[in-house]
Image 1 (cartoon, rainbow, N blue to C red):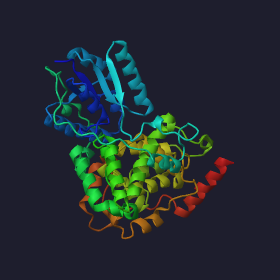
Image 2 (spheres, one colour):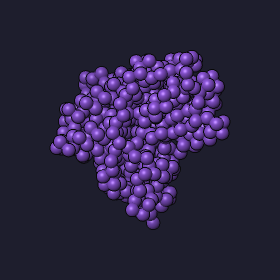
Image 3 (cartoon, helix red, strand yellow):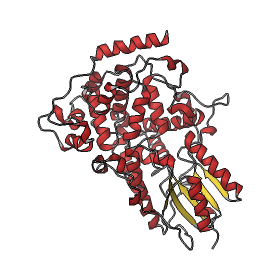
Image 4 (tube, rainbow, N blue to C red):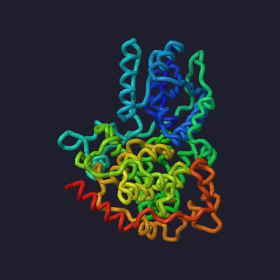
Length: 469
């Protein structure tokens, strides 16, 4: 048999529409699918790591279905891959590109080292519709504002989807693999792992089913209903995109077809998909998006570092029901409704005057759909310091937002046990998930607000005035 190729999987855990998989099969060589739990991946937050374990289990099963297997190894990526090349006699390694700074440095080191040994080392199109360097302004640089970026991308052709293979040729002798359970990727969740697991639906099949259900039942109302926090009106596909269980091209073509057929919610859905694309476009061209204020003049803004109020925010104890419901939903499910994310982020950065990076770090710990680009841009957008940002003086009022987007209070009652005499299982599950050290008790009285909303707004505006003077 020909020398095999090692396929290094990362954020592309699917068989369908997978460019690197198609490229490997086109060589006619046997393939050895590999996932490496390297230090960069081990740095994921607790919820994301647990969800990744589930994604890997689902992908391993899918590979078995096409006559292959997933080899699991732990350690620095280059060391692991070089060892696998020695064990298998592989001709080289292929992988899908990543676009954040840490992953790009790692991948460049791997590519250079493998090529220096005379091995094939190829990266292929990753988890975006368009490679970030291929979409440029008329002046030849990257876009900095979403609306013109949307107009540019809307007019660009998107390659058709690639079919899923029915069989993957394997090597004559498979290398050894670690056991996924031995990695214990749920340990950081502690007792919350059992609660979080109830809310997860992983794998390519689940992603495609979710897309089909959304397109059939909810896409038409997406533009009108997506902000209502108690409703299942969104696609719910963000975590599947995070782990590459579905391709953005699959979503684009489904949405585009629906738009051409006159579906009233399809264009809004496509814009949300391109918002994610825009975030990766920015993170590629401006790698510090997740660490530094996009607008340098915000470096003088008097945000507070981590503080006692921020800890109340993390625990869902601010006394603002919509904010607290959002924070508890995230801790239990690993997800948070997008409208609720904006409200919770605004409350932290404006009413509580807390640095957006404090919130970003907590979301990274708790979200199963953690996406470093989309979340960094989202936090900076709300805070006012970021690209195409919401003006700082646009301060979400949690009370009026609740009246508008949770008019019957269903979302708040669903997640806050202290607000109802007979709380439901979902609200109570929060107390099963949080650390015992928090001392949370569903029978305790609901807390008073940390700050009067009007007073918090005035304080934020005064801070803006002082910080910009």
